[in-house]
Length: 471
Image 1 (tube, rainbow, N blue to C red):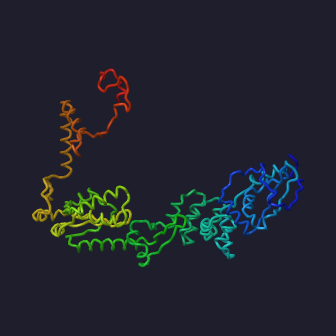
Image 2: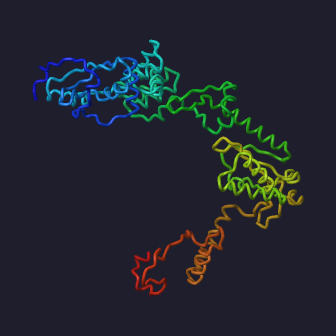
Image 3: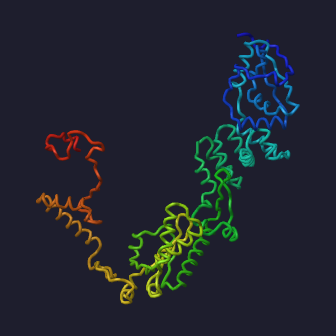
């Protein structure tokens, strides 16, 4: 290769029509969107850096600046770009070196430097649109960089030195306490700390606006009560900075909802802080359940219900139809009578989506006898169902159960036929929720999916099969 330090190149004004993309240019794949953005940049600010070319048989080939060439092709209605200044390579070897060197030596601006530049441009009065045009970037990208530009200088310095990552720096944007920010920065420099951990250190008590409590209370009600909010611009979410205020509002609104329901005639209404109420919780509270008395539809209503249900399955039901179907379904589901409400109550809670949920028709143990006497609750045949305390302790009851299990196991071992009978009973599904064995019933395919000559289920003696193939 020749000594490139001795290259003598000149700049030549060339009609754009005489230019073409040289085969020496290594960039063959480009983004159309980026070319459009670059064309806008060149139109606004001119061609800041010349393209480079080499005289070939069919004209001047562009060996450096393929993206600029493609962008200029979109600006040929503008007289300013119909003639282009081209830096000309004196020979083929130089053109080849240029085409490789241009792309190999290109280095993107470090994010920290870009952040500082965006901040400086903003202070000079540049608009977001101006900055996006100048950098050939989207406005969303500019906004993200500008939010980082407001960080304390030590944070940006740490980013420039590689002591924190770009996403780490973004995590610091949730804090408006510079003293705390710098304290946390010192703790995480060079530690490879996660973004989530940094956010928790900056705002350990903050909760997201998607928290069920915040959804139920409402952001505006929280702010009206003096609650402060922050923001995580990169996660595009609002942070609740005063969870104590949120908890107070949440509890009061939930209690108000319970009071409203009790005013509708229920004997009692209790607010539950959990996000879910299962059967086991109802059982632990020793509550019995009564059910709403179902209603009946007229012939016309039944016909309408069937029609709307069919439309739902076909996914063609409109909003009015959905409302009408819901009203008919409410009739079928029925409602609780005044007598039922007089002996029962409701549990009120907020689910994970922030929606009010109600478990209605629950009778407390102390009210069961009166509910049974009133005919709104059926007498249970289970021992202890009326709330009578068992004469033995729970521990003794468990031990007696284990003794009974051992006795059954011993009997099964002494009588294999009993073991097989119990096994068949469980597999039949007739044992209900009671299991004779700690086993799971699964369907085990034992017939080929396609017809196979010579195979008949049960046609051969089992002892002819390999034991491992059976298992």
